[in-house]
Image: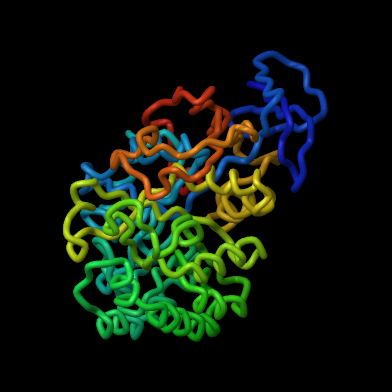
Length: 430
């Protein structure tokens, strides 16, 4: 046995004082007492499964001034995340075997945690998906235009579903109907303008079309970043094979934000009204939402301080997502078991990766926390290259230690990992 962790661990929805035996990066034993050397004792902290963020934009390749795989994965690690899934809207757009291999080569050299890579679906690669999917963790489809996207109109949905139906990987969809967006487009100068220019009806229309076509297929459909109460109400009645994600900014923020330039909070789909935020948070508590996904999409301060209509859309969040929800759990605003389900267990199930639980046979990925160490987020202490956060000042519990496959990446709040340690979980056959 390579090493033993000892402490109060979250196993099968409750805490147990136990020892966790690790060999070759895997959990091989969980018992009250395990004898052996190389023991780490966490006597006054909690051992949780590390989080998995299935929706990030690390901007690499193409936009290194915003983020790269090193700074993005470092930020994730400090937020208790041991594995991320990166979206295709980099430059070049990740839509072929060559672009997948290029991005994978970059991630292999830079990432400090494990990762998966999405393949973007375009009109040009639809017929080739069976041949080029081997290295990807799933497919990404943009139904409405957003930052560096390559969108497909809803009229092509049947062809998309047909071409992915025999591939056992998720189809993650940005669900805003392009025709609806065109109809409502306007010059924007405020968050209210942005929300009314991308109204909830565009999300609703897109989701209704997705649900209608999905009823005739067996594809693994994942609807990303739900933003409105109206859309979520429709999804209450969905087939449970369809999974749904929500972002921290849609459950923690609302359109009345005033403490910095509104362009900093411009994101697609938009931040909406207080009742939308509250409805989504309540849906999360009720188990109606499968995952919390950060949609980490950093831009520089210089870019965000442009005139509102020309400022890019997107917010950073991979480092703060899990810690903010842990703080909510500590305050009894949401069950800790729900936070772990939404940030670790269900993401692992959806992506088919051997993580997300403290159980024999799973990767030894852990997030160790002092449950009483609630602090205010200070953006100057975060690790994303963009150097700002929409959640500045909100409460969070950051992990003291993070393990990936049995190796410490964060130890006593300090990075001790290695650049390039992260592995593509798809190429490992996970």
